[in-house]
Image (cartoon, rainbow, N blue to C red; front, side, top):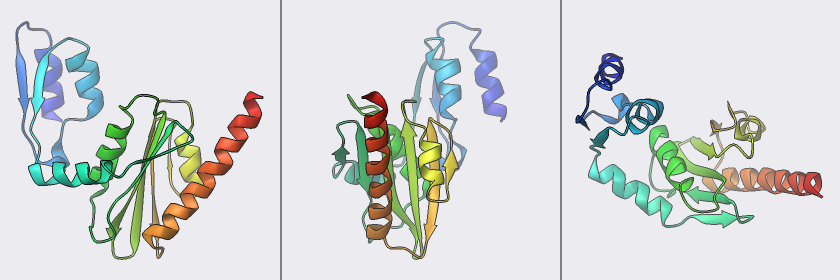
Length: 173
């Protein structure tokens, strides 16, 4: 919290640059970087763990694009992911052209599957993931499924996405 206040105070000065160094659990939130640093054209770099970066990139390389606007990625069945990693992957996928929503599935433990989702606002993904027991809002959402396989979680989510895309298509026609 102290860093958030310091960044806010320092935005009053010119020609400053931030080097943000912290463990993943204490990273500066995206809204601070957007509203305080980027909005004020303040340079910053943020360090990250190389192994976690490589892990995220492996998931991203296997992305599947559904319905031309939905990015869907699934982690390896042999890897246990942190919820934060799934969220970062979902954030990254939303940066690609024509992608309006992103969904990332990965194992959180031997009996838990996590789903992290992001949206540009075109679809309320909080409502989508509430159908699986999760929640959120129209921009970010998540859920945890217990006692299902990665494949079963994928099938459940894709079924819901198919139904939602069909409803959106009917509303537009």
